[in-house]
Picture 1: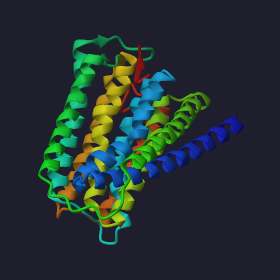
Picture 2 (picture 1 turned 90 degrees about the vertical axis):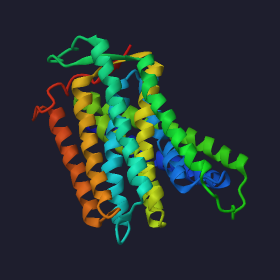
Picture 3 (picture 1 turned 135 degrees about the vertical axis):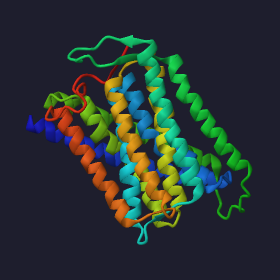
Length: 352
């Protein structure tokens, strides 16, 4: 068993490194294309860079559902990635800058608040599934509330993302772009971007396979490995993008990338898995508490940013401590040491 654990630990590390390389290429091409098409900084961070750096999460949902038949792994990875993004990335970015991370009103009042709407829309979608398409508890479900979410319900969050893109488009229309100062060849950059997506897909497949094998080796739910290992591995691109942006003095891009990535993950990446599977059974008794944790983390970050429109180094360290506490709690829940979420050990969702 030890040999298998070491093997898949190496696979997970190598896969994370592959994702990082692919994401670095993607970030470079996305940045140059944004400047070529003269997009405002906040749109660049919230849409172009965010969607690009969120491609690993989208790949996780697609590959988990299509190749491995493990929608629950993709779902847990997305939620875990969103929690990682909202706590760890601003924390690391804030510590990477000597005087903390500054914010502006667009980030606080538009990006952060729309992200809260995204969490509410996803929770509402799962609620409709539990109310209108209830499903009996699965094996060992202990009376868990479960609901079937199909393609029609999946269109609700996708429609909300359409609204998000419309708002960003309005910002682009009102933006007075400076002249492009570097030579950019758009076809070449699009080619690099597509190549980087292939690299990221290969890395995500290795990461997902490692999570599945870890679950089998340790006889633990894949939910645990999805919400921790896969979530952290696929969030590496977002982390590097935001930290580099913060160090370069682009705090707006750094924070907008965090919120924009999470909006994309919740409103596009999760519905993508549902559209592929046709329908999935979601354990609402788990989904609601996890989204509750995500909401709490978002509110804490929002309050920190609103006080002085900045994130101090002390506040950044507090965000990292909160994430560490979350990992300890979710591990204890999965091991059965505590029972605050009674239905955690069973399947979170399964594809039909």
